[in-house]
Image (tube, rainbow, N blue to C red; front, side, top):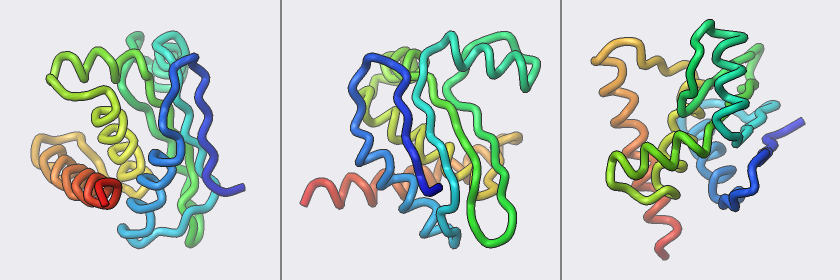
Length: 141
């Protein structure tokens, strides 16, 4: 089962662009897409997952579970479109750009990147910027 994208909300998202971003990150980081599920949901679902699996009783932008075995990248991630929307307003960016950034962030987590410390967060943010620029450049031609 290759990359699958599920949108459990009524909001329209550019699934083709998000899939392209995931595949770009995995490929450029030296991985091969195995079975990856990208689930775009609302706060209710992500809060339940956060509580049930991580013991955090709040909504968050993304939760990633990596199951890499062998040479293929496998896993799933959940992204709350509600949190993306509020973060986009807070950061003064477009919803689509914030969604793309967090999707790239989640794909980087699947590739083993971590953001537990300020230094790791900075390194991960730089990778996000690199891929955002690459995707924006490709879609502007």
